[in-house]
Structure formats: C-alpha cells, structure tokens
Length: 470
Picture 1: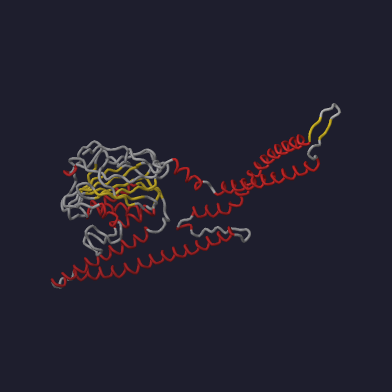
Picture 2 (picture 1 turned 45 degrees about the vertical axis):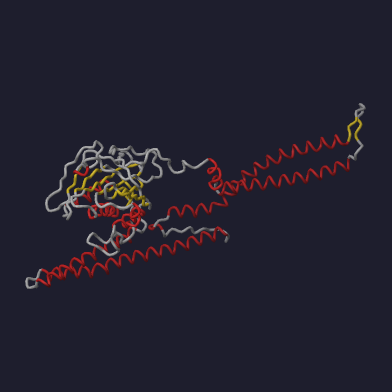
C-alpha cells in the first residue's frame, strides 16, 4: 500500500469528496502518517491522559487526480440544449422584442409590396409603355419590375436599420422594466439572520412587480418574527433547563460529602449524580445544535490550526479511559466564521474520535488549505464502520451499533452538531471508513480572502467513500 502524499488540486473550484486517508506501514505502532513517512514520538502520559504527538511535517488530503471535474463529462449536445436556460431574462426579452419587430416589419413590407404592385398595374396596364424621343421604347412590365426591385431593396435596408435601433432600445427598455427585480435580488442576497430587518419597500404603480416586492417584504417580516421567537426560546430553555439540573447537582454533591451518609445513600447519590451529568450534556448538546442551525451573526477570520491547537491543549489536561494517542499535523487555514462554533466543531470531532476508539488507539488531527478551502480532518482507529452506516451517524441521537438511547459514550449529537456548524458556515463535511477500522472525517470551509499563502497536503488514501454533503 502506497502511503506517499498526493498533491492537492490547484483549481480551487467546487470541492469533490476527499478520499479516506490510509495509515502507512508503521502507523499502528505509533507512527502517524507524515510527508516523509517518519515516526513521531508519543507523549501519552500516566493515568490515561491523552498524549499529543507533534510531527515535523504533515500532508493534507488531496483531491482525486485523474477524475473529471463537475461538468467535464457533459457532451456538446447537452451544453447546447442547456444554453437557452443560461440566457438572462433581459437578453431573452430583447431578442423577443427584436423578433416581433422584424416579423411585423416583414408583414408590413409584404402588404406594401402587394399594394404597390396593384397601383402599378392600374397605372401601367399590360401592353403599354413609354416611348422616348430617341425612339426607344420601355414596356410597362419593365417599369413595374424596376420599381418593385428598388422599393424592395430600399425597404429591406430601412427595415434592417430601424430594426437594429429597435433591438438596442428594446434592451434598455427591458433593463428598466427588470430593474425592480434586480433590487429584489440584491436585497435577497444581502439577507442573513442579522439583516432580516431590511425591506425592499418598492415604490411605483401597483403592478405585478410591486405585488411581488410587497409579498417578499411580508415574508421577511414573518421570518424575522420566527428567528426572534427561536432566539427567545433558546435563551429561556437554556435558563429553565440548566437551573434545575445545577440545583440537583449541588444538592447531590452536598449530600455525598455528609460524613453520616450511609453507603447505600452514597451509591444512590453517585448514580443520580452521573445521571444528572448525562442530562446536562444532553441539554448542552441540544442547545448547541439549535444554535448551530441558525444563521451566523458573527463572522471573523478564524485560523483552524489555532482552533485545533486550543482544543488539543484542553484535551491533554483531561483523563481518557482508553489511553488514546492524539497526533497533530497543523498548518494555517483561516475561514470566516464564529470562533466558538468552530471550536465546538473541532472539539466534537476529536471527542468523537477518542470515544469511539479502541484501547491504545490513535487519532490524527490535520488542518490546512486544500484547493482553496480551509480544511480540518480527523482520523481515528477503532471499530470497522460500514459505508452504508455513515450517513446515519450524522443524524441526531445516532451511534454505531447502538439504539437511540444515551450511552456512556454520549448522547449521539456530536456529528449532528458538526454537520449543523458546517452548514452554518456554508461548507461541506465528508466521511469515509478507514481501512482497518475507524473513520476519516474531512471538513472544508470557505477560505478567508488573502489567506492562501500556506497550502497543506493530506496523505492519499484508498477505500470506499461515503460523502456527507451539507
């Protein structure tokens, strides 16, 4: 199996699903996949703390080489058939105006031709003509033919000139007629959850376009009210649900510290305290899921490598029951977004990779720039994940080979939160089973402009893909 890196595509277009990376020989022995295939030293500490391995070089996963991009396989005939659908309404109206004008001009020219021929037949009857002083004679048929040819030639030239002027004027008339629709489109493009207060407020006659703009404004009003209601609900639910659980936790902790408490009471208290902690995690996950499904109100340039470094630093301070080694391969990659949500995204990916891992397993966290996208990838060892199960793992309360009830590994909201955060940031998330067991999850987010200086490369991989597209 080839573990050498594959350079990423340089086009920067729409991302294609990333192949799952495959651990090179030796990775299972504590050697994370690097660009040079060198081994890293594990920092796994005592008491089950997560060790973080820093490698000198890193390869970010690249696009598949040699495969056609979107649209390259379409035939010329298909492109020609779809051409009318790509023409703007303004141009189509202009063509329609011009075609109608030329059609009307041709009909008028035909009627004029018939009338002129009738007049000439009455003025110059058949068999007559004109005799000149020099003795030459011109028949009436020759006179009629000459007059008809000159009339037809000059009329066609006049029709062509006036038609060109009519087409140009039709273009500007269509542009002016469609300008209110352009205003509606510009407003719709500017809209987000934080700008729902904007309105089109179109002035003018009570025509169909004015009715459309008023209907759009009414829809914005309803959307604004709905978002306000959702924000109030999340705030109220956050307070009303957290407060009773916090009180219960405090009472249980105080009861457990009572020296006169019996062993049975302490056993029940510890069970209730663990159950209370699970409920707190579930509520926090649901509130975070609700927040991530809303439109972002904060967009600041955020470096994914710094976010991942913060998550891994906090992770190294916690104890993990299965002594998983975490390897970091971080290069800069900035995306405009909410730093808090992005930290939750990386944290959920890493926590999920650790919880669903084998004893003494490994996790690789990679960040960088790939084909014009800020990218973060988390790969872990663990149980074999069937490709057909991957889509279901991104549903709320879903876990591999488990029911929808909460287990010791969590409530099954981690990947659902990841998907919602990626969707809020207008990115894409891809998941694929890792050869030998485990999962490879790659998130690609829009890149902050002017931050493409550092490009990373992921190790090439093989295996069946199951992209989860947001």
